[in-house]
Image: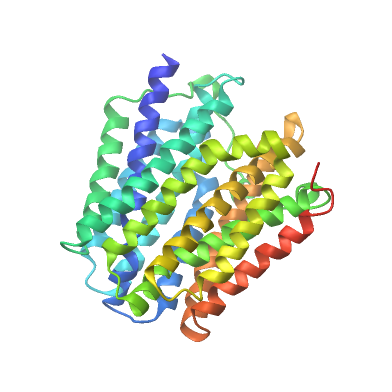
Length: 388
């Protein structure tokens, strides 16, 4: 029964993230219909990330009290509404309204993980979360490819396809998915305001001592990736006149490499050289690729840099998560992962803002050089005791 329920949840997660991926290659081109400033696209991405960051603990607290299933279904319907508004946008403010609604309801990933934890034994939980991550990764690989193809017919089609994927997920959840949190296991007390603060965990020992360089690695990787994707299409259009299709091809390539690295190469390297050295290698690779990316002038250079970028990001992302888990005690896994996710969420807000501002006023070279340099500085911090 647990296996069947988990399979249903994986399908919902895949469709949910497929909808997110569909919009990735087309958002900047929709923005360009109303504004030529990359900063506007950066603010749009940051708006989505900010509201998702603020809504995640709210949806989590609600799911603890009313159950996972209704929160998942309602939030998926909300995402569909946001996608439809985004697809119908005839003005810039409608793009922001659509992304804002989707940001608020996009915090349901934490609820999906809570559902997965409900239907898994403690021994199975790591494997279950890995399967959830794989479903999300698959959505991010397939989504941009389909989105780029649909955008070749009309820039608005990917948004409507994303709405369809969200509604299909909601229908699947309504008619097929059972509730995982029985009434006797639900929280009974009122929701305290302190519980809704997404920054409440970012303090204490999890951002000091042995945790400090690892959490800084989380910050560097998240900031580097967020600052790139927000305005990448602006840059490639200005430099190479790429459209959504060309952008989707390179994003699909990057996604496939990332999944292969996280699913296989990380495991091999961690056994041979350890998590810390694997993290350091990932940061070095990612930092160099990011620093060089802004000086690329031809398509083959972009493909080469993004391939190396994806290898470094995959190594650093997976190994930093593994290190956070190992450094935390048995009873502190949730707290440590919460700090890690909160820091990553903050960088998904700051990254697009930096990317848009830097591209408009400083140029692509500086835009990518700065996060690349920061990543390399964290790599240097990890060098002492790298064999541990």
